[in-house]
Image 1 (cartoon, rainbow, N blue to C red):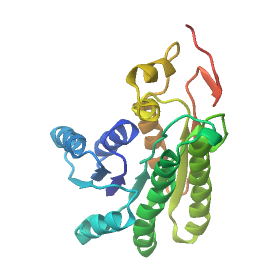
Image 2 (tube, helix red, strand yellow; image 1 turned 45 degrees about the horizontal axis):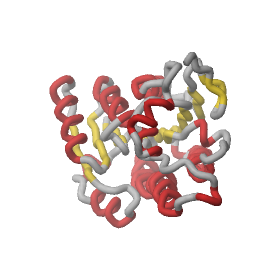
Image 3 (cartoon, rainbow, N blue to C red; image 1 turned 180 degrees about the vertical axis):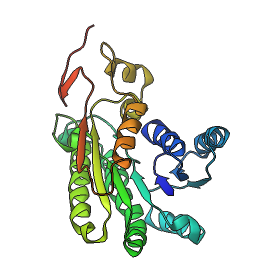
Length: 250
């Protein structure tokens, strides 16, 4: 079995790749940071008897994405499982103060990047009449909160795309799911805020989810019987009720 994990250089993608290796998947790990991908490959090869292929590219760039994918040997293109994890939040501003470069970065990564890679892989799954796609969404895809506007919009798009995939791939026996986490302590807030100390404050006073928690949730999805598809999972820290309500003991 072959799985592709996008955004595997850190956080949820990194832990998901380790979980899939434990489950016997040969892996295509993708991201923009080669040193992180090489570290992940080394860790997998030292602990699991699976094969690992690295694809280092910017998923926002369609031609680059297509060229890198098409460079794979045909045997590696027979992907059984696609984890669309690559995504980010950039900035925290009201729309009227928004940084348009941040908007484009989020839309290009979270929406267009997901579509670019899925468009390459879905026809292969259709031809084989099997496969599974898991899109990593967010509670931001279920709700909209102040200063989260464009990030929320991008994740709402992921939710809509997931439903479209589920409906349109139904005749081909392909499973499609979304996982929508609440607050997960990864590099997410560091990237969003551009400040490591500010990012620490986001998770202060409560126990957030971890990347491993999300990987374990994905493991549940991929180990269901063939007749079972979990359409969506919303997973939150115990201390978080929704996108704006978190109980912190500070």
